[in-house]
Amino acid sequence: MNYSIEKACEWRCLIKILFLTQYDEHGASSQVRVYQFLPEFKSRGVEFTVRPLLKKKADQLFLGLSRFAGVIERYRSLFFIFGQYLGRVFDVFLALRVDGVVVQKDVLPFGLGRLLFLLNQNVVFEFDDPIWLPHESISGKAGAKSLIVRYRKHCLDFFLKRARLVICDNPKMKTYVEQFNSNVLVFSSPVDVKVYESVACEKSGKEIAWIGSSGTTYLLQNVLPTLEKIAKTRPLVLHNIGGAELHSDVLEVRNTPWSPKNVVEVGSRCSFGFAPGEKGQFNHYKYAYKIWLYAALSIPTLASNDGLNPIAVKEGVTGLLFDPSSEESLMNAVAKLLDNPEKTRQMGANAYHWVKSEYDLPIGSKTLVDRILSTLEQS
Image (cartoon, rainbow, N blue to C red):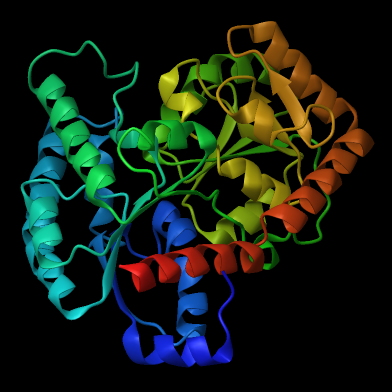
């Protein structure tokens, strides 16, 4: 839906939006699903307030919930997050002062979701990540963990039923959402290509990049033994950008905090980006957004051939696929990329043209903002 100048003036008078995000602008998921679109909302004359659940510094305690954390860190993080939700009560009451609310990656437990809908029914739910869905790594768990899984799915399904609009990452997630809500927008996060464009530098031919988070570091750890085996036969440097710290006695691992600047500076030196996954339902519900970032850096992706990776990576054109159950498959794919630098550079160039033409931010911003504003107008 396109908006005229007259319509823009109308929005300028009418629309105020509250964004309830999981992180502030330093959190990768909130940055790519909310913060990068705020300039477009502002250009339409929309007034907005953004209230993150987790801030830059305090967010580090949240990482204590990862599988790499000890018992004390886990309990400390749980108490911290519960405290943050106490503060969320104030955020929810801000819904009384706005025309609509966009909730990103937060199912507002402890009754906060129901309170929100009592205060303001014009809610758009940004269902960008399947972390709230039961999946293989947590299914079959007994006791408290099983109760948590069932409870958070209950909170999720409540949001999906009540939201005016649900925004999800891919068609696979849409099939789940449509059990509860017919008003669904499939929207894969665009990339601000001009921010991530590779800086000119000479590649060493031995560096590879992995972009992730503490919660997904286990995917990289799963293939670490194979990378260590490769490192015994040739020089290899693994850049772990944004993940939990990893160390190896055989492979040189460089741990780097996530930020757009670090992604560009480190990724530009690498021959390719790495996107290992795992077989299972959870991986089938999610695109690996890192593939978009690698493409913006003009480097190809080496991805496992599971989930939605075969859709995002065009074999031999924008990257290569490997079988995660076969060590030989991964070793051969790494060798192909490192031993054929010209072919690898061409795949990186192809990937850049793909993401620039289909997923650049100016294209995506207009699509998303148009849909949210039209939904609120109809409410």
